[in-house]
Image 1 (tube, rainbow, N blue to C red):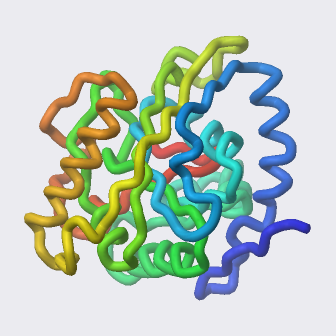
Image 2 (image 1 turned 135 degrees about the horizontal axis):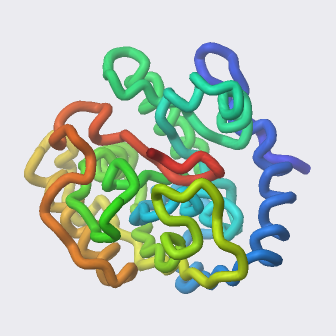
Length: 250
């Protein structure tokens, strides 16, 4: 039986084709690439978790979706809805559109993210906020830490390796029959930081711990600068990009 789709306040179904996309994509991935998953035992079999990978390729999102044994919901930039090619497809496979200009549209995306976690499902965020063009790991935004503390949900750090050799950030098409790895780390528990969801220092401490774990898993060089143009302030910067389907962030 297919999993129920989430619905936005506007009534549009989110994820109604998730099972179809997974059913087609997973066998194709196994046929065309060798994707090695390490540490999947750290992903809880039930209950909510926030999946936080580094981001080096458009393929990070679909590979995560097709590798994880459970459904993964995510947000992606609302600009994807401007193109007829992705306007209906990306939400249908599970993308929650995020208007990064802020305001009520951004708050709605954040509320839908909380609903996903409250339902006991997996929700993914790229803490860097966008793909790394240099291949280095950038400073993380605090959106994942905020969601974790507000909902009491553990964060699963993920180190993605080799997807940038399959499809580099500027490439239009992937290269076939190459290898990559998805390394899942031990959960980071919000209880370690107490009831401090409004404490900016606590949010930064938890985010820095997350980025350290991702660095250990991905093997990347870390640089203490943001990959996004805007600093770590406000909802759009914190929740800019989330993992989970064929909709990789820009």
